[in-house]
Figure: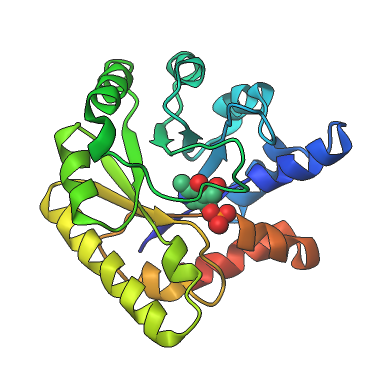
Length: 237
Ligand code: PXP
C-alpha cells in the first residue's frame, strides 16, 4: 500500500497570520502520526512565510515516523538541512511570488548544481528527492544527477477541468512512474491531491508515498485533524 505523508505547512500559515504561537505544526504532526500517517512534510521556505526554523528543529526531535524537508536548493537552507539531517529532503523550485510550489524542478537545466547538492546530502546520509513534472526528460536528468527519489507533480492532474484532461494527465503520471521505476528511482507523488482524486493515483503500485497537505488541512477545520488523516488513509488503501 502507498504510504501517506502529511504536509503541515498550513498549520504554520494560520499561526503566522496572527503572529503568535498557535496552532503549532509540531502538535499537528503528532496528531497526524497518531492517526496513521507514515511521514511528516514541511517546507522551510527562504521567506519563512509559514514553517520556521524552530519548527524544523523541534520536528527533527519529535517526529517518530519520517521527516521530509521540502526546500529550494539554496545555500542557507542547505546548511540547515545538513545540520538537522531530516530523514530525506525534497528539492523544489521556489519563487517568492508564488502561493504554493507551482511547477516541477527544471533538473536538466541545472545538472551540475543539483548533482553537487545531492552529493553533499549523500555525504551527510540524507536521501534526496527531486520534485518533477511527469516528463521523461526530467526523469533522465534526475537519474544522472544521482537522486534517490523523484516526487511526481500531480498538480495538473488535480487541476484538470474535465475527465478528458484528467485522463490525459493521469496517463502522463502513470508513464512517468513506470519510467522512473525502470530507471531505478524510488517514487513519491503529490500536489493538489484531494478526497476525490487521490485513490486513482494511490492505485499506481510503484509509488511509495503520497505527500498531501491542503486537502487534509481543509477537511480538518470541519472534521478534525485525526478524522481527516484517517479518511485520506482509507482512500490510500
Ligand atoms: N509536494 C510538494 C513538493 C509540495 O510543494 C506540496 C505543497 O507544499 C505538496 C506536495 C502538497 O501539496 P498540497 O498541499 O496541494 O496537498
